[in-house]
Amino acid sequence: MERIEIGILGIVIALVLMALRMQVGVVLGLVAFVGISVLTSVSAAWGILTAIPLNFIADWNLSAVPMFLLMGYIAAQAGLTKGLFQSARIFLGRVPGGLASATVIASALFASASGSSVATAAAFSRIAVPEMLKSGYKSSLATGSVAAAGTLGSLIPPSILMILFGIFTETSIGSLFIGGILPGILSAFAFIVMITVRAKLDPTLAPVNEVRATHQETWEALRGIWPLPTLILGVLGGIFAGFFSPTEAGAVGAALAVLIAVVRRTLSVKAIRTALIETAEGTSTVFVIAIGATMFSVFLGLSSVPNALADWLLGVIESPVAVIMAIAVIYILLGMFVDSVSIMLLTIPIIDPILKGLGVDMIWFGIIAIKLLEIGMVTPPVGLNVYVIRSALGSSVNITDVFRGVSWFILTDIVTLALLIGFPAITLFLPQIMN
Image (cartoon, rainbow, N blue to C red):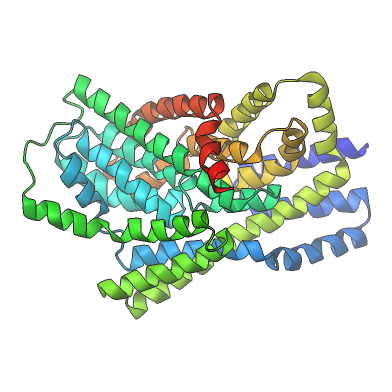
């Protein structure tokens, strides 16, 4: 059997095992070990693969992952995210679909601290959905808005996906962070416009709240919302101004979250302990997948599959846009069944040489890829965020209603994606200023 055939067989086996719900990191590591053993020898495979975890963990850039996770978990445990939804509803409650729009804005702010789509969807499914249902909103809009808004956690910096993409493609993480700002704002704005238009055309979808907020309520809303913007401006502003690197920004963000919580007197020993445990669990999950993906990329490199595929595509397709569209279809299809971190780390070794051979800007593509993974997180039949909401709310929510509601947000995301592909300056404008 030829090397390329062994590589293709390894990819197929890995996809089948992941479809059977085996742990992704274990699957990639196991397939890599067997594949390298066949291509070289068992002793060579053992020598290569045992060195990877140590070298991987020693990468300084990876320290940003636990630090940003810690920042988000401390912010959540110390109550820095409390009041986001209530504050947003004070300002948008009288707008058609205002509670759903408030959910989008609050989710965007929460996402910028947590960096996790799943965490964002889980948090607001318990906060926003009951409030919207109580106000007469249809279940499809209430649950769909939370599921879709949760995906902003991957696109709005700081994002774990951006860190991993930057490391594995040797792209500037700081530029990815800054490049995600305008696409993130555009995505949130597009959601709000779609919600407002639908609610205006069909008032039964989201009854308008005619109660006007008092001056006292408005002041309390402003007081409740300041911690998160302060935290995010401190982190992203420091990166943009060049005061510290993206890797250092994680530690700065965690320290700033602790400082804000101390000032507000909302930080307890129990909160710190819980945040540390959740950080350890989240970091280990990401690292196991990433180490397995690193092993798998070594196997693919030895099989020559990425280079062969790159040579073939470069000879057949001359347009980078055509390649991007093909990758988009693959990402959305995989996103229906596999989590976003696994998809990114599985595909990067294959598509990286192709894109660089075509001269594609990797900052721009990184944001496009993350946007595609966002769409996959709410696309049936799996749609991870949809099932997170179903798990959080139980039998009070019909899974069909969630998928029906989220379909409008998927269409909106496709329009946003088309704008990002058609106008790369939306992504690249701020990184070019920073550089």
